[in-house]
Image (cartoon, rainbow, N blue to C red; front, side):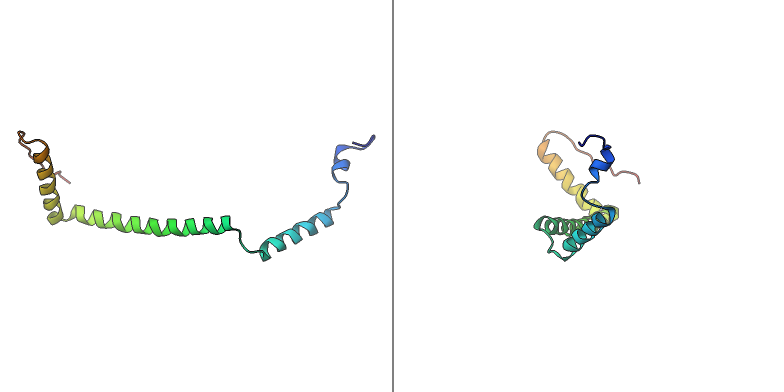
Length: 101
């Protein structure tokens, strides 16, 4: 630091406010004209895949919700569960009760 100069004046040596602004604008133009980086393209691709996966998950949830409310599917599911439980516990009597909704 030069003797007798304040810190603020030392920091501003070399560029005026207008030249700094022009340099920033030039940098922004260069960024705008440049091709996107691989990292940025990867992020965009991940975002798009995430949206697609989210939509598929919502469709699956809606289908499962529909099946849960349908009595036909509930009976089939109850039978499957009963078979699995009886296979695991051969000497145990299993009774599956329907939940009151």
